Image (cartoon, rainbow, N blue to C red; front, side, top):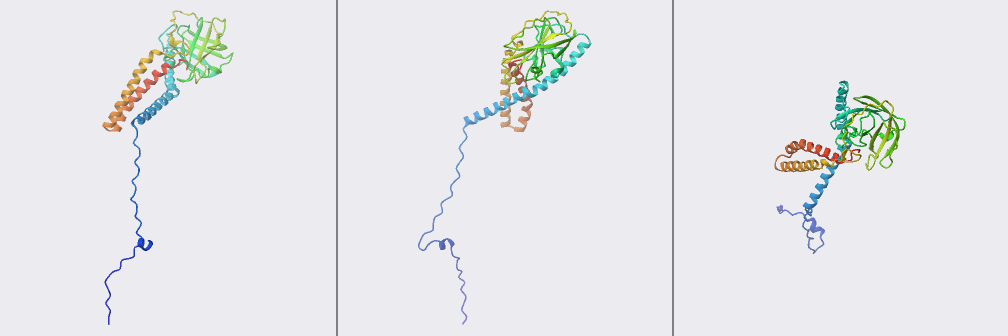
Length: 309
């Protein structure tokens, strides 16, 4: 007799039930825990952090301007001024007395410290000394009767007098003006605490900051004239405060504040434009204007620093 096969399918055993002891209930699975939400940023801290970051970038930019870009600016001015003075000397129209501040008046050569064909401009204010060494207007021009004084920066704007402390007694100095070539010989060195007593009537004094880091005092070098002096036409103006050693020009303070305000306006306008429209277009439009404002602001800030630095 043929036995019929049953169609009933037996379900496979549950592994969980087999693993559980007899008569015990299945262990419940705990629900998955939700990930913890990060703490919300505090607006005040964000503003302070952003402000400190922007201030740091601004200060780094100013340092880069003082010790890098300002040197390129001075080198360009020297090339322009040298060509101007060379033409004036050739046409015999170079200045012989007090002239416009910033105008070229002499060519300085000090071979011992690598100074060659360096143009000296009229004036010793911080603005004048961005162009190169400056002649103190209240003194005769080099080569004339009397004591002539030239200032030069120690660390910024190309540091034209950065190696002045390497001068030694006996080193030669020559200066070319509209009255011809004059020769000097270094005889002594002094500073703001130790003044030189030199009875020679015709001399040249070179001033700069004593330190390239912290300009708290000035040093100067005394050179006696070894050539025949030329006549001093006179008519020299009295020195102003920004033209005296280690002084800044407080007259540019208002201009500095105006450029600072312009920087805030340009930055704010660029931020708003980036939030409302395309950020790339906003930044592309604002960047040239921002760089121009920063350049003028840095120039104004440099005018507040000591003129010999």
